[in-house]
Length: 159
Length: 89
Image 1: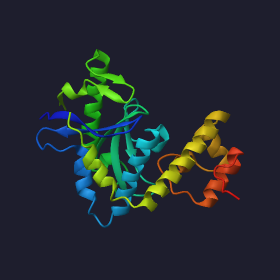
Image 2 (image 1 turned 45 degrees about the vertical axis):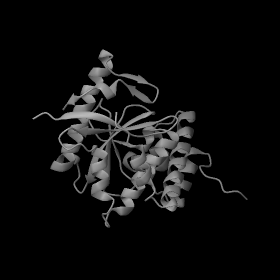
Image 3 (image 1 turned 90 degrees about the vertical axis):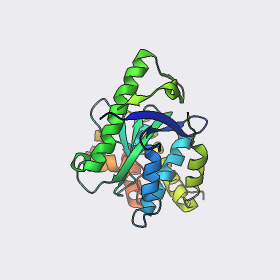
Image 4 (image 1 turned 120 degrees about the vertical axis):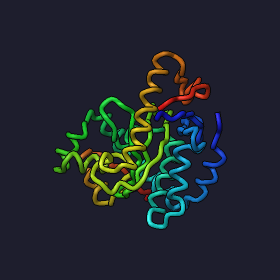
């Protein structure tokens, strides 16, 4: 069943905007769910804090390609924010150096995310959103204006 | 559009200054390596060959926010032929 999805602004700086997606059914952004899952987790607290620190760096200097690891298919925007050898992953869509859409994430204790039902779900949600976003960008319903996804606030994505 | 900036600001307060500094330093090293590689027209494969490492290792060293040892930084610096970090005398 398709899920009605909207986009919310998580943070912005002079040059970068961090967005996240939110499913109508639960009303929380995917990034909020990630934070709720790991902020009090003693085992992964350091990884979690380093991921937040990395997002602060992204706000400071940009969503540079080298800060992320490509994890999706050829041609999509899916990247992961892993920190060194840590197992915690935060999946994102790097739309440009100035726009990052943050999804959910979790512990990658398998070789490929496809081997984890949970991680695969998070990745597929972002990939479906990415596909729809590209269609809307092509049609002009949404326009990238530097760090802003102009028009995204009026859209409901069915992913 | 809902704006979660205030919520995110609160969450960032949980990050110790030392963690933030560590990640900032890591990002600075990665950006410096990237800048030198681009300027010299070097690919990841070129760097891997110079280092005598696999591309997978070089990818781990040069993307994300790696916690590189001084040994690794020195190896990369020698392979690139330029200093990556400097310490005030």
